[in-house]
Image (cartoon, rainbow, N blue to C red; front, side, top):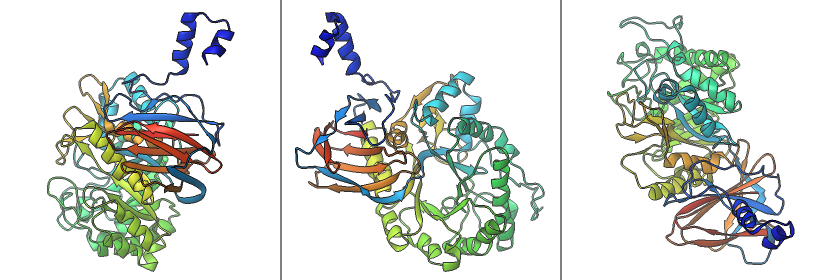
Length: 489
């Protein structure tokens, strides 16, 4: 390289500056992803590398390109793009009412624009491609509400008073801006509670859905989907109930056992979607890994199954392998990972990076998940605003409620290693860990444009030198200690 620069007639200082620029990438500690030149589909003899390290010396920082060469060494890992698995639908988090409020009301126009670009632009940011939203209030809203609240003792089975006006205060305006940046973003809606008049206890908090409200509640979902569609916001999927086995008097929640959800989907929600020509996916369960019988009970019913796209899971209990077990039983149904939160209980950046990769991002995708979604997209410096729930949860970003300034948390970089490089429509491809290297975990994908992304975690205290076989070619890379690298070519 130096000889080539000299031949161009550059002076010594110019040479040093040019070498520094060519070797560039993000400087240590720089938290802004550097997209670099466009990736050529199929590769052109070089691969591009981005790294986040547990010591935070690299934060989704682009490194020097690496060469893709003919085979010279025995492989650590072999990739096979002729073997494909599930199709990816996206990576992201939840735009809760609290998140939308902070973005819409606590930031200046320029601050908001910069944040949304950082979050949703795939070239200049991390390209979040999937959002979950709450259908009505959750434990992270400014107040309790649904889209059809009535005075105590009154009902509205025809849903004459249905309105998303409450969401038009913050959620809809922010979603519209997001769709402007990422028009193809996938959105999933999940309710914490039906309107209180539909429930056995007459409250948003706890209780069960009354059986005589099943038909009305199915139409409630239809009206929700159509109302957001009228705002230019497409709802790609819904779950009938968030965490149906968790009931609390502290915030909106509903007890919905598997038998009840089966009945509702089979006899009301599914047929209603069909008759109304609603193509929004129905995804069942939406709770922890420690119970796979719930999803299997519903998927195992032939009539209900025809309406169902798959099942969704959270990570507050159980093990990620549960998703593989459901796939093995029902391989024609999708798997979706939809919630886990970081928080003040886990503040070590390195430990969180390793856990997130092993369990949520590499972990869920290796176990057939089409999505990997975290909880709140944004919270403030006091872990809120809260609505009776978690008092020390952490958002993907923290927005200072006084200044509007943004702190990008470990969750931001965890999502970015996937969302920026593994785009919707990508398929997971075959990967063999030839040498079973301890502390090495990896997954790989083929994008629709022909580009490939390989994400590898080194959870050990020392660098790991790996050789990745691509068929007739290979590349070598030294993974820094306690770091994750995304390599794309």
